[in-house]
Image 1: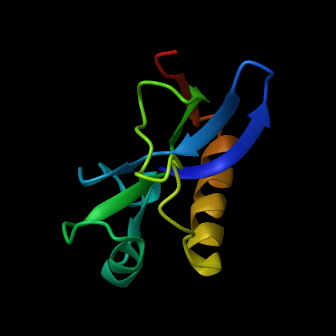
Image 2: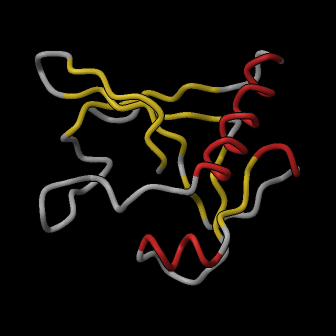
Length: 107
């Protein structure tokens, strides 16, 4: 997941995230591929992965959908600026078409 926004609600932090998946997107505009070098830098596996730009998820942290790392953080690290900008642009394209789905995850 790529964190897009974090808001303290008083009952926890509400995260809005773009999910990362191993499932290839149906169309070229629905996701941005994560380069292997970026995955390596984040300590992720070597399988192809995509950041979904047609759907974002929202949930309270901590929660059952994302488990913390050993240090208690949900963060593996930062993606490069150029990749974040491509992802943000993709989300903007879908939002402009009214096609970004927001899914509230289990809380």
